[in-house]
Image 1 (tube, rainbow, N blue to C red):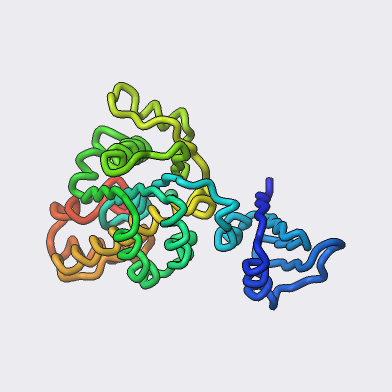
Image 2 (cartoon, rainbow, N blue to C red):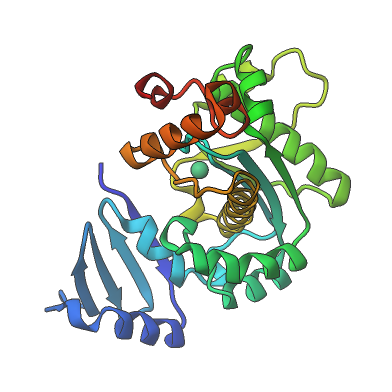
Amino acid sequence: MADMITLTLDPETSEILMNDFSTFRTDPPQYALFQCRIDGCTITLYKSGKAVFQGRTAAQYAGKYRTAADTVLPQAGSDEVGTGDYFGPVCVAATVLDRESWSKVNQLGVRDSKQLTDSDIRRIAPDLIRLLPHSLLIVSPEKYNDIHRQYNMNAVKSLLHNQAYNNLRKKTALPSLIVIDQFTPESSYYRYLKGRGDIVTGIRFETKAEDKYPAVGAASIIARYAFLCEMDRISEEWQMEFRKGAGTDVDECAKRFTERYGKEQLYRVAKLHFKNTERI
Ligand code: MN
């Protein structure tokens, strides 16, 4: 089913929206001020200030126009980075936004971190790190390979998110709204944590959460920044560039690495259970 998101915009935000999409403008329906069709989304702005985003990419486009009225604050959120990348660590960040930090964070242009370029991330993240109470876990490939012998990827993610919230609640109180960008169903998440004494509960699991919850978006940016810094560091350490993702260019990198340093060193820079390992 197509997503639908309804926001209530103030006049200023309405202007910004109409400006942003002026080239995609179509004839608005009755009672509407403006309508546009963009890739996977129709946006209709009504005279009342109600804005309706409809379609596959609704959450992605709506993110920018959320006002304080549409945002439950305070909110906590977490996200992980590096689980789709053969090289480099897995990074998980969790953070809390309150009303005050929300408006500052908004000015920095925090939206879906996936839409931000690496240089955007490098520019924005240091401010977020300074402004927001947060926790950050960086699991090196070496450590990851070790843990993965015992736990599958989703179990590892569950353990890390739970740990991130435990670390975060030592710094600041966790609000009643806590959101994880869903990677596994809620029941599986808690099953992976079964038997632990430190389980953070009452979490909301949602897909595309980084578009819907600015705390998740901010956590995602912090995690991505940590990932980039680690990639820089290992590139320096091994004197070669490591590609992101898990595609054929990554296979080439891995071949170059093993030629230079030997297969037995690969566990220090790569997640060995990926198919890439077999391919090289
Ligand atoms: Mn995610």
